[in-house]
Image (tube, rainbow, N blue to C red; front, top):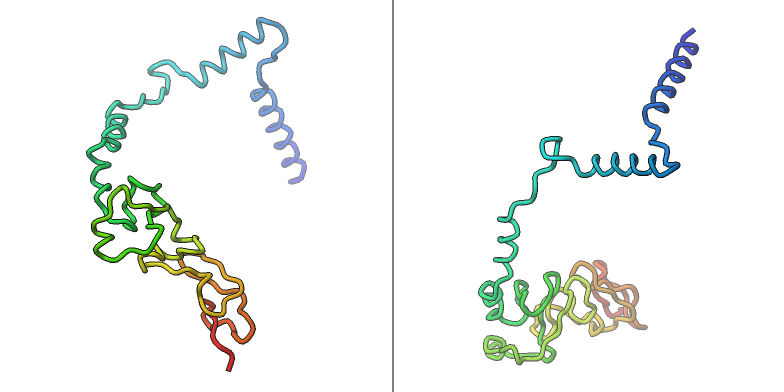
Length: 177
């Protein structure tokens, strides 16, 4: 008895859904025009028919203001290797000098100072920061390392050369006793 009622309910639901959810037939020019009009009206309602609010001009103005030369100039005077240095590199990267610099050279670096954009979270040669500034590590230069990677700004040693073993934390190679 319960099965019969559930089956009847399922058939009734299917009948209602299948007849009300059928799209307008699209055979012939008149049917195509009607279907286009229905779709257009659904996706572009007139004002007052649940129309979405139009974007305000203030949002556009804020975006334009954010990219003005005055705002970008704030970042130009940052030293190389500063994470906020958006004038030189994209947001996820940082500008590192190509060659090692002293502290005085870093502070007096200009736009003429050669640099490269690195991703400190994954760069094998500047893992965790700029290796040329001493804020990051060159994972390939670790003593005894044979296979290494950089993930989340940390060197991860996979294997060591003969005479070395991977350390307990997996970040370096230790001489075999």
